[in-house]
Image (cartoon, rainbow, N blue to C red; front, side):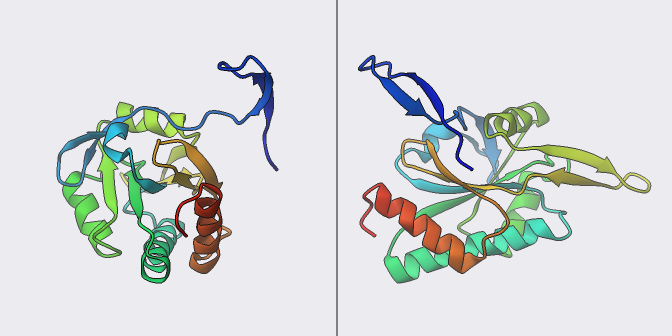
Length: 185
């Protein structure tokens, strides 16, 4: 299903179809303990995923898929898409924890975290659902909407992908989007 809204184009004044706004400014901390914001990613195609390092199942599968997609696009098509992982569990996922976790999948994956309020704000901007689910003792899981976002070099979301894609399918879909946006693919 595609969402579409009608509105006036602010430049021409004509009727136009507009998509819902997903994404926005953010300031987080990367796995090297440096402050980063959306401006740091301008000029790059980005594949963005929200997860957490102690996820027992879907999370690691999605990070694995992300790593394979980046390899496929780079090796077969010589295309660079920057993989970015944003933790939705910043209380447990310190910069060092993120670095160690992501290195197991692919050291090119950029890990982002930071204060709970900043992570929550970014998640809201990207329409990411997440909720802490208490377990026995002090342990907990985090329910979330396991989506990946393909973001263009101007930091606009061009496509959202769910868990139904394997690495090969996701690579093909991203390639289609890059071709639509006239990247040399």
